[in-house]
Length: 366
Image (tube, rainbow, N blue to C red):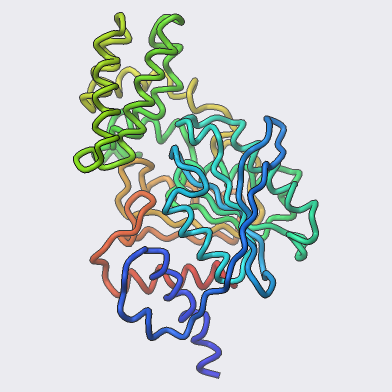
């Protein structure tokens, strides 16, 4: 009986270690095997056109089906962190659809991405060989976490979602934009914001900031900066070349685009924030972008967030959990943990922090 009760925790410890990407000695002693996994590339049909995706199907059958939606990142299904997550989930006995969304890969946080998550769920649910249980589970990371929460509440799928997990996601996008622009949390305390988030959302405001004929060139320059920022610019020669291209782009632009690009290159949030903030609603106000502005998710919800997150602040999980509970949702679990930063694992955490994360994974897996 004791071994039976402990087994889910042993599996969750192994999963947490494997997802960290680190070599941890104790992992060798955990009696948890990982299933062989077959993969299949698919062009998933959506109302906005086909989306390249990858199916992971474990040998020996599947107990659940998951859709995993990463955040804003130029990488596709082979992006190392995403591939590690999806492969390991499949190895735990789940069918997994890895769904990097085209707009998020282009640094755009827009409502059609939510439509595509909904369409992906409908596509899976229409195939009983992929969803023999008749339901699907959703997991989203970063901005993908907030969009996944919105999709889960859509009437077409709301009653066929088994559970929803958001890692470092948001509840209200304009509120996140306000934080990124000011470095102030909703309670008035200060927490310096990451310039990367400002630059991403600044793309949506460009038509409000520069003449129409300057938008395309400024958009391209900011994207070059964002692509370079995804790598360690000190160690990656390609990133250095991209940073240099962004600096050259600034010099070639007319005003006011030139000054904006210069501020992006300088990572000057003190200048970029006041430019973006007046357009927070124009950029992020679409209800399709925010769980707190959309039909309520009905499935059990698990919110996991870094204890200090300077892209999507940790207060978003606190606010979203409170919002869901205030509107009658009774199955909401939230965890703020130093074991992750924004969407990446961290080192040097306490045994208690690891245990709380493991316990959350056990609850997700039930």
